[in-house]
Amino acid sequence: MRKIMALAVGVGCALGIPVFANAQAAGSPPSDSQIVGIVVAANQIDIDYAKLALSKSKNKQVRGFAQQMVTDHSAVQKSVFDLGAKLKVTPAESDTSKSLKSQSEETTTKLKSLQGAAFDKAYIDNEVGFHKAVIDAVSSVLIPNAQNGELKSALEGTVPLFQGHLEHAQKIQADLETNRATPNHQHDR
Image (cartoon, rainbow, N blue to C red; front, side):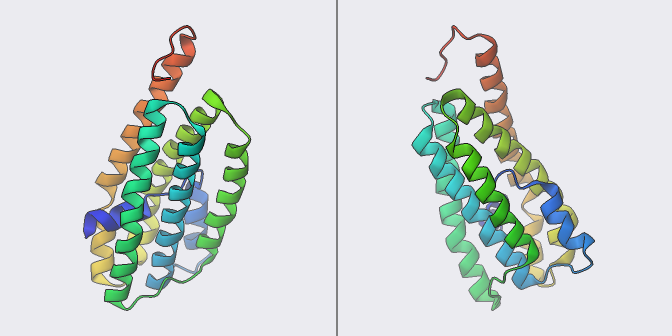
């Protein structure tokens, strides 16, 4: 359960640390219900981005990563709801979850306007930035504010999983840069 819950928090793209930090900085730390709401919102956002990548990208690595995000986070979404039900914690809206959704609309609009290599780069750059932000947010906002021990424990198990997603995205990012530097090489196209 911890691994599945871990993936739930580490989703979404181009969300950035400020979204998570603002909730804490505003002096109103998120409740457990709001933490679950943030997890649910972020998870769905990443599923949606990944589905967009699957519909737009022709790059084998990008498509593989996107499919992994859809597969992992679809399973996670169910597990998040199951854990919430078990703990009697209903996902609640917060300024953070609202900001996540608002930023995802902007990012989706940007991604939809791009094609080919420009889309691939933007999608993967977005995933890299998001996973860096999530690693920080889980450690500095979500874990410290979780009141339920089982929820806190599930969140604590997330950082290594987020690191794995980050490293995977960074490898693809580096490969995309290498391919860009050598335009005659049509690697994974």
